[in-house]
Length: 134
Image (cartoon, rainbow, N blue to C red):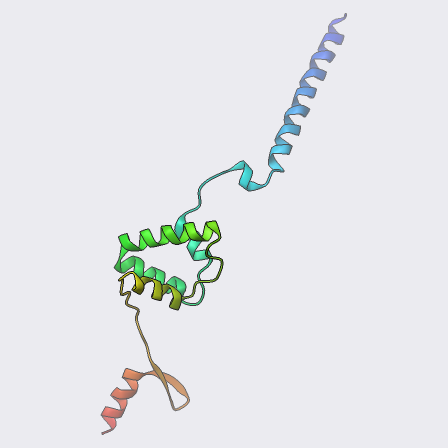
């Protein structure tokens, strides 16, 4: 066998190895992302996905006022969501009721707006302006 033939065979073998490697990596990249990387999801992220109207606001207030207790509740809620026992949207009212039922009185900033001259103003501003008028 001549030197050129052996060089050609070596190049063919190298090219075949590259093609097999590319084929394997292409199959790996076509797998769904869940199969290629199995990183556990953060319990808070699981809960945030199912929160509805004002749910995130209640959760953030609870986290700032009762960090340790809220962490435990979030963990348990995420387990119930993952298991399918909770499959509905949790709005702020439901979350507030849950926190209160376990003895956590989460406080939210409350604003009452009233209409004055076609605009909405806070009740405190309205009372202040009516006091000034007297």
